[in-house]
Image (tube, rainbow, N blue to C red; front, top):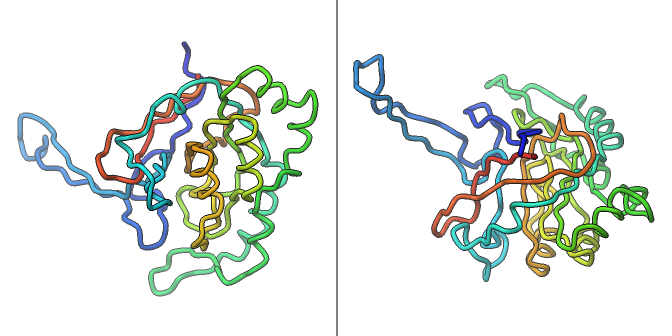
Length: 248
């Protein structure tokens, strides 16, 4: 099979993480500059870095950790749904709220703007045409009894944290579960809005035993059907895992 798209952002210290989470850092233990016989490194980072798979232990007290995840949902037929024509415009409008965070000089967003929350929520009517009879979603679920759906929104820059990004209305997760979708993915840091404490979309994932990928890079991927490989690492007692997600 030929690789079509690598949909994982490059992991580096510049990759944004949730405020207060652990960003990526590495340390060279042995190397060529010190005339060692090999190069040897260690690194430290959040388990939710870049393209990653949440295990249900992340959002439910009775959930499982990454080492217990069945791999089947992370491999197989997948449909990329492109919603960027709406949400990229909304993101660019809100990006104008960027201000300077002095004294660090780093950019930040004004997070107390309440308008963005509803504007960035993915609702059923946002992909009604794709889900209608004869649409790409309708045709996909008729062909695949247990498929996967990735949502392209272009509403987030993975190298600059912002509270402004797309997330799912719980009804969308319920709708996808009724169509036997085994995994959903999105090109933002979370399927819930950044300030959520009840994590309604995540809870619907738990109820339906649906798996999730977050932090994908779908910027260059056209809408359509592919095959997905995005295997989580076997990390004991850890609630998430980075993945190298590819479309073939």
